[in-house]
Length: 118
Image (cartoon, rainbow, N blue to C red):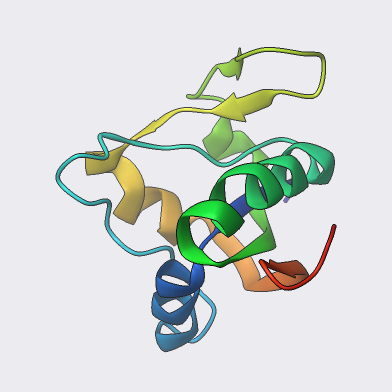
């Protein structure tokens, strides 16, 4: 099976829910969050963590995980800005199935807080 490595910037509350899943699943989206958007590279995930999650939640984390590449073919890579700003748009109602195609564990690769500088 071919795998694709994806990244997801998260705040403390989402990280706790991932931990509660045994590091295997992302939590369901909130009602005002119709899309789950993993990103295609760590640099973009770091940027979101530092610029959005830290100011909003006081801390930000970058998670890394592998997904079955064949499953991911159903999602188009969306570019939302610069050359590194590539992400997948997974409809919230498909997140459980997306989680079923994660291979291995979700891991934290970076952490940032309002007390430190990135």
